Image 1: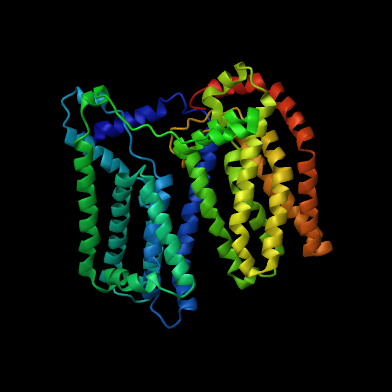
Image 2: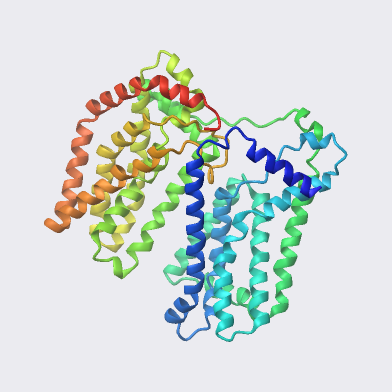
Length: 489
């Protein structure tokens, strides 16, 4: 029966009307995937020597075990966004003499065969090989790898149970932030607390039964959950849900832009793909810690320019690059209404402007690492407000690919075209190039001043630029409508 299910899924994949579309992009993603796997193998080989160098007085396994608590939490966080749920159309099978248990086992089996469950092996197996070559006990090392694989499957099935539960996601983010903060300021070390627990998986081979048992328990929990919900008349049952309406009356203060702002805010909050942009933007605030805390980057001012543009403009790029494709399902309706197109674009610009200001305010604590960090972030924020917002809106007029908001946010290539790759050159490349040139010719203060002045000039020319962008959208109006009507694009 499993072979029959796999055969049907395989035929569905190749017979899909979408198979031939975006073939070049699929090939590009294939090469990117190969690059990731090769990088993981290289990291796994180098991890042993890295740990020996930075922890010369500790066993590499002992040193690595301290980081496993963060690996587990980050793995859960990433799986929430990246891992697709194993979905198959089961209705045709429910009228056939096929056991519900077989269907449930197949769905869970497909989930277990996900590529995300084997990425860790490309990291830890090379590391284990290096351990064996250096004389570590064969049984301990092999069962340690088995324990890690069992932990991966355990996390996989935990993710299936917690999927679409934003409260659990928030709890994970808070735990990671609290653990890291306490670790950084020397108040409490989660690494030292959990290090003996994870090291026991290597030191005592019999403990491999614990993660294996947890994985089987999670599998059984998912099996009971799925089997109890596989029945034909599920769609006939009336669904009741408590209606929760947010009070967005304050958007009326923006006049004609108010309805558009209200529509965008509801869209962002009610759809997983748009909501993920907000979570990613907030998470990227901590990206600066990777560079600000390392002395090696202390004199690399162009790196700080990249951080300034990236952190204050992360929502601008992630959300803005798909304008107006976010509205693709009802864009044709908007264009048939007596709605000023300029107000529509102005509402998008206002929403992004608020995000830039909010992200800059969240980066203010980086002044702890020096006033130059605050000054560069301020100049980059002004540049994003005055220059990058008009640029990203202009490139939006070339978007013609539809986005289905109810689809998974990660691993989802809907809406992506060559425009998304080209837009990074002016949005990220241009300000960094300008900053670097002025910095090496004059000084850091002069570079910040140039970015700030350019942003202020762009902001002063806002009306002129928006008028030009509006005309660009009008000229491409019908091409965009036609493109957005094509599903599976």
